[in-house]
Length: 387
Ligand code: FEO
Image (cartoon, rainbow, N blue to C red; front, side, top):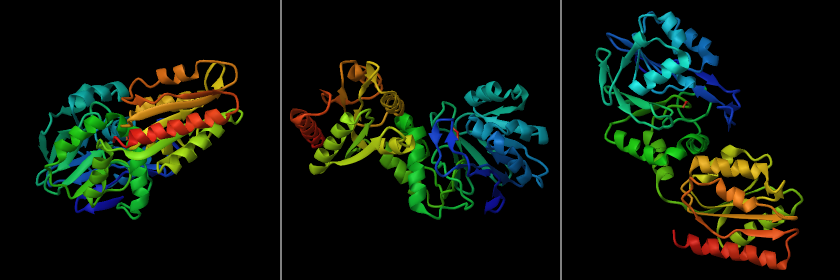
């Protein structure tokens, strides 16, 4: 529990030991569920709550608080909303402030009764006395109902998942900028990247606010907002780097030999390669590498007539994350036949990429196969010259 400014207190919880989010996303640095208490001279508001697994910490942090008038739900996902029912039990007079979409979700997800809500419209304000909350709709970061809350007099943006970081820390503020940048990029890649165009619109929606502090609902607060907003501007821009993500899996070594050769051929041409063996790869690292990469190459053997399941997983992930990648190719080796390339190609309909003809070979690569890989590297180089 820490004071951000007078009468604005962080009352959320760290979850340093959590290893996966949504049972999907690795959390190498854990996470936090930030909740903020704002005491006006007339009303008191709680901005978001915490994951239900940490409700005791939030309730303990509120033990001296006699009255809460408003619980602002910026987002219905349970890591922020899941303790609202417990707060309503302790403070039965409190009302949940949210938008119409969020209200419907909270009724479905948490069975909160209809009479507990105050529904707000975009840009609507609610007074706490000398402090004013303004609610700004920022849909699709990363659910349809998401909004942010702006504390006008103090120039604080409570952004919930927007600009957040899965990074457990006892420090309210950023101590290690490099580590937080990496965590923020991982967070953006895994959660926000599929909604890049909407993020762009939402950046516009907040650009005229004077913001001194961004207080997200995961990770440290940003006392230097441009640190995170500039990073977002970079990630959502159309710019891609002269890089290839080369993600492969190999059964008997042939596809690995191809991947190693292609990597060297690309690097010899001045193209940087982010190289992933899909057996045991951290999908968060892979997602981060996708944020601004120009080309993706997936390597797979043929197994049971199709692509290897880890290559299928990688292709499905890339398709779901929708990176701004411009080019894609596939490489691999087969023993006796199959539909590996067709199967992988069918898994990426969301990508707006130009497909560079795959290199598919039989068995252990021969001299002519290495030549085909060199030609693929040359084609990638030529494509990168156009970006
Ligand atoms: Fe942090 Fe979308 O919940």
